[in-house]
Every structure is written in C-alpha cells, then in structure tokens.
Image (cartoon, rainbow, N blue to C red; front, side):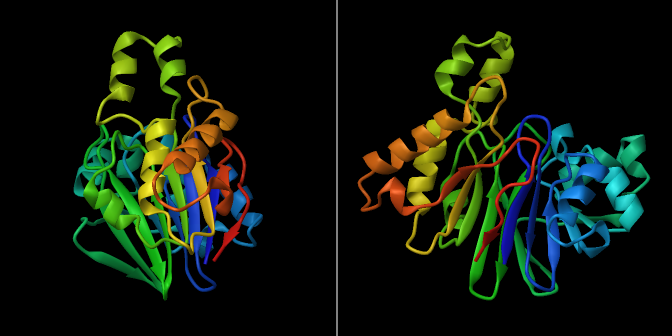
Length: 264
C-alpha cells in the first residue's frame, strides 16, 4: 500500500491511498490539473482512481471535485449530509449521478481495499474520517476534527500509516489576526485539532508497526511546520507509554505539493 498527501492545508486537501490494484482519493480540494499532475508523479492518472471519498463539503476539500469527477467518471462516496448539501449547489449537482451515500456503520469494498468511514466532530454536514485496509495493512486520514473521541481512537488503532490534523498553535491563534468568532470556532469541539491535541491523539494510537505519520491541514496563519513537529514530538516524549519520538517517522505534509511516498 501507498499513502501520499497531494496537498494538505487551509487552501486545499487531497490524499491518495492505494494498493497495486486499487487507488482512491480522500478529498479533492485542489484543482483537477494539480490532482492529475501529482497522480502522474505516482505513475497514475485520473482514470486509475476507483473512488473519491469526501470528508466534508468545505471548499478546501471539494474545490477540484466537479471537474475531476466529470472528466474521469469516478464515483464519489460521502455521508448523506455532505452529498445532500452538494446536490443543492448547481456546480456539483451536475455530477450527482456519481454520488454514493455511505455511513459509518458499513464498510465499502473497492477492489482489494476495504474503506471504513468514521464520525468526526467538525462544523460541517455529517463529516467523516476514513480508515483503509488491504490485507493486514491499515492506513487512515483524520483531519478537520475539533476533538478526538473514543470512537476516533478506536478507528485509528493498529495502523501502519496515518495522516492526522495538526492545525494550529494555540498561542499563535489566540494572538493572531483572525476575528474573535473565527478563533472561537477553530478552538471549539467542532473546529480544528491543535498541535498539542494532535500529539496527545497520536500518543493514544502509537504502535510498534507504524511506518509513517503525516501531520496535515496546518494553518498558514496560525502554525509553523517546525512548531507542529516540535509540539507533537514533545507530547510523545512526555507520555507515559514507552515510546520515543525518534522511534517514528513524522513528517509535515506540504500545503501545495506532493509529500514523500509512504510504502507499507
């Protein structure tokens, strides 16, 4: 299996997960041209994608969806809340024939991939994270979550690779340029995960077989890559579990470029 971030940040998000036989995207929040170019770097093209799985309907997760799906005739999977929101928008209603409603109770089988959605807390219409399995290999994407719950921790256990949100440094956010109401939204249980809370979540799901952890969806106004890494590593160092941050390959996913390819 491979996990690659095609882009991860406030301006656009898309993640590739695939095996030798089956390929999917989680979100299509960058332009169709960028998606195609970055898939080409993996030896793929849009026609190779078996499905796009949407976390939610915010623009930084769907900006390239309409063109990408229309050109390649690819099924879209998401919650009822997400897809019903999109059906009411003229641009996305054009591709509604490709929409497939899923819930967090059922697994979706595409080729040799088993994809399971799980509920997250965010100010969107029924948002999801995703866990993807192929044989005994397991990966997940969990961004845009204001908090982590027992169910989220359960869905992130026993992974080989993970892309998880580390959106903001709390002090930078509190003293930064955003208006008060936006700061409140980001800090709420339906907002975004801070660096510190991202580290605490990672501590709960660490295991001996994790090959790679990508820190994703960093704010360009309220975070710095080195600060996110430092905060997450500190949480692992301070945790009671017998792990050292040097035991794990932790990388910040780039905002507008392909990441390192993670093979498991």
